[in-house]
Image 1: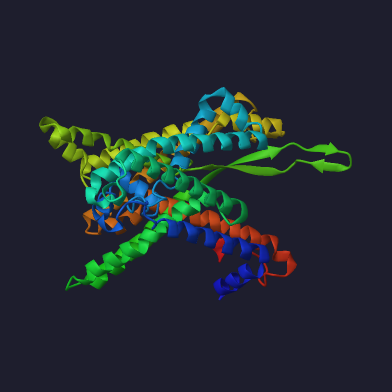
Image 2: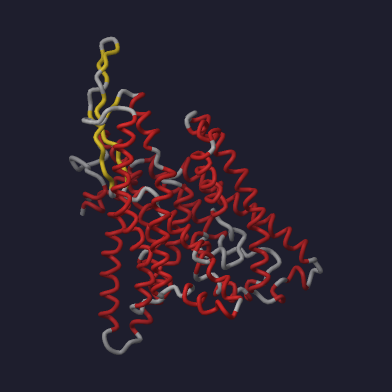
Length: 444
């Protein structure tokens, strides 16, 4: 089989083999750390904390940390502080001239922004650490705090030490991600998030199979139907992640010495879903605010309606927010003016469109057209887990029918496979590949 032959070719390349083994070992270290509970907490009393981290934004944080958030692990905060800091720095690069200048300075500017991101990560951890410890105190019994009850520590001292440990754990996870990026295969931070998501899949799948097999009539048939629907949903998510609108760019010919440069046509790939999963994360965070109204009797019914994850109004507002945030985030991150200036600087132009302002207007019009269907498709994928729950699929497995879990899973897997494919293509002419031509992993 061609698949088996491809696997053999992967392990024939020494550099690729070392990178894969290195990536696997660092991910193994991360997964083991997710089960190391904070010192001074009785691990046998964490059931209530685990139950409270299944839904909403807290459930999202628990998913990104691979369950470490609900285990009161030393890696409980995971990479979320780093991601939050990266988003802030990225947005500052759009609105603040100093950061915009750093973005255009190349490698030196990137190093400065990375350093700022790390310091901002530390600041965010200093806020999230005490907040997390306050949540732990409110969710698990007081008897679980061994350091306070048996060693005589004060709550302040215990929380301070735990916050320092959480900070060290989060920075260590960030370091693991950077090492995977440098010496492993793929984007390290994205891989760590993906592994946390994949770790929940076997439990969710076996729970769903066990629940359906308990049905006397048609249980096995329901499982087959669910898996088929899930397969087509994955295909739709792959299409959304990979879909691009290619804008042709022609480069003028120029002669330097005896060599001719330019005169070729290339393409600018404008992604239909340029915002990725960020609109879903923003919308999920905003959907937690209606729960504040549950404190008062007069608005408790409104809070219950807007807090029903499978209800019409929750999903309608959720869908609307995703469409709005997709437009906003795409407008912030995709800069047609910068693309037009870069083309003009390199001697490129779009056939039939004048350079300068007309090119900016042309690119902006295309992004407007492709963002609309992309935002609707993203909104539909985001509410698919709620639809799956309505049809009787358990909450854990339903989260893989769409939303952030599926999009991150699909995006990271595709990116990693493309990187592996690039190594295979580079070694093709060294005789390591027996096939005549590789057209990409999709042609396997």
